[in-house]
Image 1 (cartoon, one colour):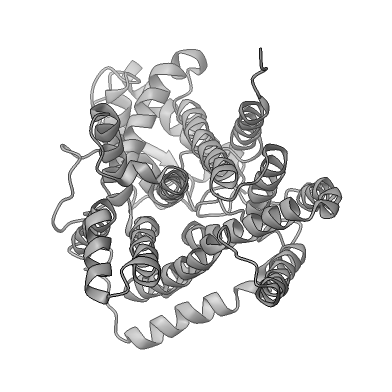
Image 2: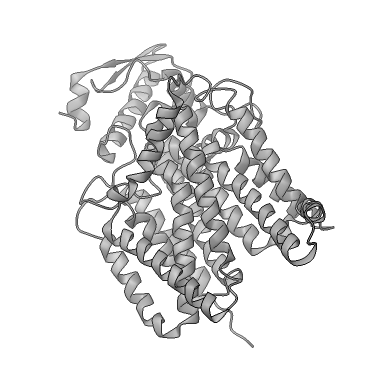
Length: 491
């Protein structure tokens, strides 16, 4: 009896445990600012896009984040008796699962789409994951890895939707039959439609991945039909539409989400006095991005690009076919389209967004996928180079892993995560004391540098009552108090 290969499940388990420890102990995801507290409670009455208002097309994050917080309070709060820590554990668990699925599907893509052997695909997937942490690790402190977000809410509005869109792209590349008209499998189709709906109506900064991928896939099919079979423009176009209805539907659905997104904030309320200047600023931030990257990562990108060019020249001279590398060409097109579209979106809202890692994950994901795919392909077809694979992995790992605190904590004030957790904990404690004392109104004493005026205290009061921290709804307001600065470690 043939033994089952458990290398991929064990690898995925290792990735999950590594990411879980990272987001629980090294850089926990803590509740701190106003959007974190607001979206742990606020959810749409129906998971449908809304015309106008704030984030009209962000159905997925405004549904998923409060759901995760509710599950966290149900599972972890009885164990910890700590509301912020329970939310932090659940957010870390969810993000770790998303990253694990992201790496697992990339590994599967290497095997099924690129024809890479299992051991080499696992090594290449390890590079793929490690480069997310190496790309912007340029100093000993205050670096941002590609899974970094400015706060807990941005993880659900940017990072997780981007990972979801990439997961669907890798899945469809591995199993293109999922996007064909097949009879049967009704349950699978329903689940797929629901996931696609939430991926498209997540955030336009993320869903553009799926939208542009659908366009490039239609283009690829059209070129195949036109150059190999039909030879006429009209017939090739007709056959492309007949066999690509799902892809065309994906693109149309994404255009609908884009229309909804521009019906409300932040794009509708943004005052853009000089769009051309903003767009050029966004492109400038992209152009200077390599200067803020890690030198080892830059060597990887430039070296891989040069090796790819030399390989193409060699294959053209020898007249060797390159069917596996067609993905790289279309991935490069996707990278350009996504980067330009994101620059356009930032110009319509705030051009400085183009420098945020939570926005850069989408185009950088394509760069990492292209680089790791080609290196795996090259090593697969040149066995003598495989000896360098574990050496490269070890070198990249130790380029990231140092004795210093290399990465930022996820909060907008660049505070230590313990301070942020202490602030949130003392908020909850004040509500507990108010409930025990029978108060009908609470004056929350907060750090003096805390944005008390803009903080939605009603969201905190809702959370405390909804999850049983208090026995009734207690309205509140916030005031700065110097003694709290000392209590939470702010001086």
